Length: 560
Image 1 (tube, one colour):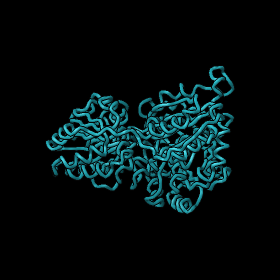
Image 2 (cartoon, one colour; image 1 turned 90 degrees about the horizontal axis):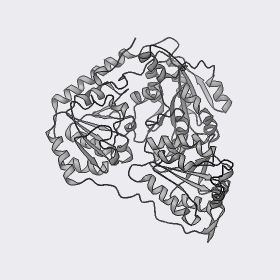
Image 3 (cartoon, helix red, strand yellow; image 1 turned 90 degrees about the vertical axis):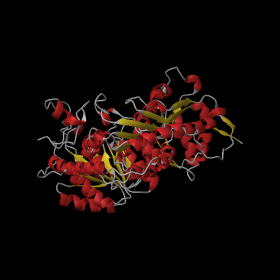
Image 4 (cartoon, one colour; image 1 turned 45 degrees about the vertical axis):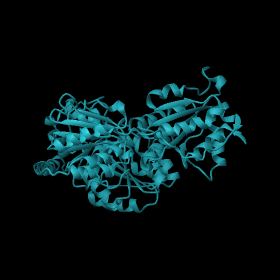
C-alpha cells in the first residue's frame, strides 16, 4: 500500500514503541501533525508552550522510563529552539529522536522562508543526524535513528525531513521487530582478572559511579560489588538515584558541591573503581592534584572517555552490568575494619560541618528545611526534578532518593529552564507526581511551560527557592570576585503566587516552616500543578565547595 511520507513517519514511530510525542506545529510539519491527528488513538501528542520545553519534556520522559524520547518541531526557528534541549540530552547521554521539518529539497540552500541547516547546526551535539532526501529511505532512517539513540553510550539523534518528502508517497511495510541496539562491548576476561587482582590487594577501596550505572541497569551489581569488597560508594551528580540514599555504604554525591565524607573518602582511598563516569572538572577539581593518592580502575561503555580527563591505571571499555557482574565472582570477600572506622569518622565530621554551614534567618526559609519538609510529604514514589543553580546542589545533597530513575537534572550542560519541561514529560510518562525544585532565575527562563502543565493537568509541585539573585554565580562573586555582584541581583517584582493563578494553577507562599508544612500538604493533595514560593536569603551558600580548579585540601565548609 502506498502512503505519504508523513504517514510513514507516524507509523514508524508507533512501530518503534513510541506512545508520546512532545512538540509544536508549524508550516513545514503540518503534514506530520495531520497524520498525528489521524493516529490520535494510537499515539499521543503533547503540545508545549515552546519548542525548548518540548525537548526537555522528551528528555524527562526518556530519563524516567529508559525509553527513547521523541520531539517534533518545524523548520527554522522551531528547529533552532530545540538546540538547547538536544545539547542537554547529548551531554547527559539521554536517548532522544528529534524530528524536524524543512523546506522542500528544491528550495534548500536558497535562503527560503524559515530555512535553517539544522543538520549542520546540530552536528556537534548529536550522536548522529540525517536529512532525508529520498522517501524510500525514510522509514529505515527513522529506525536507524532509534537504534543509534539506544546503542552504547546513549544520546540524541536528529532526523530532518523536507516538506516534499512528507507529501511524497511510496510503498510502506511495517517492521514488526523491536528495536535491537547495536551489540554491547563485553569486557575481555584478562582485563577483569587484572581488575580483580588490584581490588584484592587494596586496603581502602572506593567505588565512584555515574549515570552510566543507571542507563546500564547495573545498580544491583554495583551495590553487590561494594558489599563483597567492603567499599564505600560515592557518585557524580548524574549517578544520583542509582543507589538508595539509605544504603549504608553510600556517602552521596561528591565533587565541587558534594558531601564532605564522599569527597574526602575518595581522596584517602588507595583504589578508586570508577564505573560509568567521565571525571568532569566539577568532579575532580585540579587534575594535577586529583588521584595523587590512589590508583584508578575505570570502566565505561564509551572508549572515548577512557584516559580523556584522568589517566587510569586500568582502563576497560565495556558494558558496566556485564563487567560488574563478572567482577563480583572474581574478587575475594573482604572486610576493611580500619577503613570502615575512618568512613564513620568522616560521616560524623560531615554532620558537624553541615550543622555549622546553615542558620535560621527570620522571615526566610533554610534550603535544607525546604527539602526536608517537601520530601516528608512527597513519598518515595515521586519524581524529583531540578533546574540549575544553588537549589540544584542543595537538592542533590539533601533529597532522600529511594528509587532508580527518580532524579532528573541537567548535569553536563547545566541548562537553566530545564526543570519544568522535564518534570512535565516525566510525570506524563509515568503517571507519577513530580516535584520540581527551582530558583527564581531558572524558573523565569521557561515558566511559560506552566501553561502546558495546566492544560495537561500534570501533577507537578513547583518549589521556588526565591532569593532574588542568580544564586550560584552570585556565590562565586561573593567568594572569588570581591563581592562584585555584577548582573546577578535580579531586582524583580514577580509575584509567583499570582503568576500561578494567572496560568490557571494553584499556588501559595511560605515564609516559615509551619506555613510550608501546610502548603506542602495542600500541594501533594492537588491533582494538577501547584506553585510554592519559598523566600530564601541571598547570603545562603551551597557548601561544601571546592574552589574552581581547587583540591580537597582547599575545601570550603563554612563562610560567615
